[in-house]
Length: 337
Image (cartoon, rainbow, N blue to C red; front, side):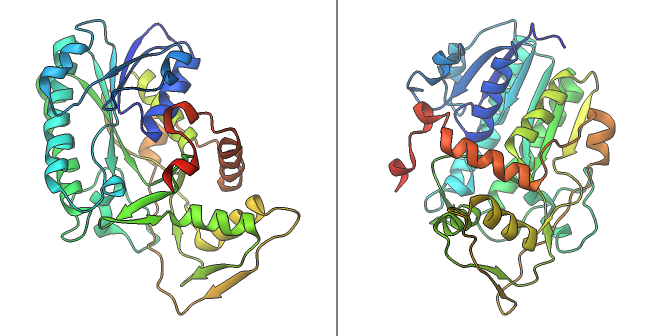
């Protein structure tokens, strides 16, 4: 593996960006971490990584970045529904459409040969609800209502822009369609249609830690893709070292995890003092949404195989929770109450 490469990561302060930056830095890559936050509290310096603050919506701020000798750009930045209090669709236009165009222009100008970008799985919502795996190459659509509508429209536009830069300028593009990514972060909350709520799996973990009953709503056999951030980082490494032209790749394991498996796993791993929470079935409650990714293209072209099954994912997540390795960057759980 050639680690003598200069990698620039936009969105380095987010969950995917931070785990990727630390992993690649530890493997000997030359990393430049970029985030919108003005300060990183010295976190990246401690990792021997240079940090630069850039708002990707402002083209002038790209002047703070290197003008040459960048081999690959990773683009994980942009507004997300899960982080948006209230509803400001213009933020999606600015950060995802304009921001991605600015990132692509930077990639072209500095002569980088490759870009890695993350796409939302909401572009395939119309194919959800069956046990038939969703292919990587589909007609990309968007939800007509809800907090993911404009967001997905903008993510699709960003993919189109990235495709244009591939065909026009030869910048290889690796676009990763993400399902639920489990990654420990001290912030247990997210936003749904602009309202703050605790993430469902974090709530279940807390219930299990306290030994309190947990419920299985609807059909316990419905399955969904759940991916550990460290498997996603492994796939990012595969994309980084690939000699291929790239394309759109599904992230997942191709099998999914049933709701019953999800609940039982959390109860087993997070139960304390030898006490496991009672599990209560509630078939009267709404079903969860089922979707499974076809990852045959991801396997064939990138040689990707997940390392973490669901129980190993939870076990490592618990270790990360106890270690809180990113405390200098993200703080503690008390900071988000």
